[in-house]
Image (tube, rainbow, N blue to C red; front, side):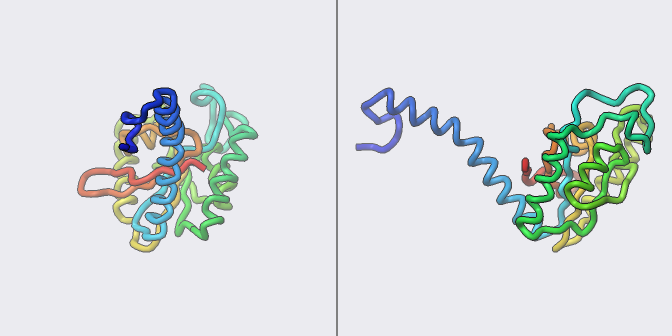
Length: 196
């Protein structure tokens, strides 16, 4: 008898098998992605760029000021836990970034500090909202050049915003998600993702 689900005589059993596959497939894919990410980070020549951890709300208040966290959206308690989980994922695997960079926004700096113990702020990773098109284009060019220059055997970790990751890769990301990036020719490729 064939072992394919369509050949099973019990339709209920077939339905349960297909449902089980649908439920477990995303989890298996996530595990495979995390394993791929680990191997890629060990090989180096990549950047892992994180969207900052959970910070409830949308955008910053109109009067926000860089350097004054009380005027910005900040990490929630869950966001702080998520940022610590990112750090634990790296420590558990003995992975240490050669360099950690962050957007100057407090929620990004806090994510980097909780995950990696600190970061240098870099304006190019800052939110593009409120900046002019020339500034945004210059920031994207600097980010692409930095990914292209990532040395073999080493990797950098960046913490930034959804809008920056979307402009850089053309793909979405969730809070606390890390995208392993490499440039290939003129293309920015997302090679793997982790969601600690």
